[in-house]
Image (cartoon, rainbow, N blue to C red; front, side):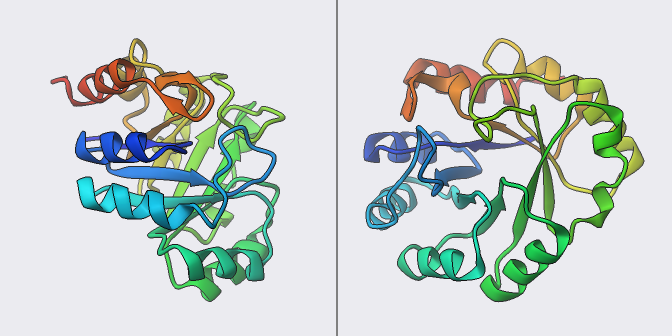
Length: 212
């Protein structure tokens, strides 16, 4: 079954709802310019609520951090996974991975076939394929899923997380097209930035679990 990450959780009630609903991953965004930014001081409370309600793993989302920034956040909240969503190069990713002793995901914007040709340069547990947007994801923009499928076929052992413009009404088609290891959604299950909509959340999860 395709795994599900609900990203951009900012409220305790949403953290509890998402975890209780069975999402595999909850994304907490630590990029200060994000509309879904979570202050590291508040993150332990969200983590505690999520872990008390279910078994979702916590993914910390960072944009172009240095090692010290990631270590400072992980000292406050016990993240399960680090997601790098900026312009980090493979060496930076490697340094962070060695320092944090946690799985690392790397987000890669996909605008053309050229963007998927060298995904194997990343020393990470999973690659998150997203639409190229100025706001580093969460904009509801979609990219060509056929490119994601090509990436899956070219690198069959790679764990591909599909993001970008996913919603309850299109995620089943996305899964059928790409067969990703996981899907990632933020704005597609929201009433507003950082505020999850219970009905959309339930519909999204149901669509990912529907028989194919």
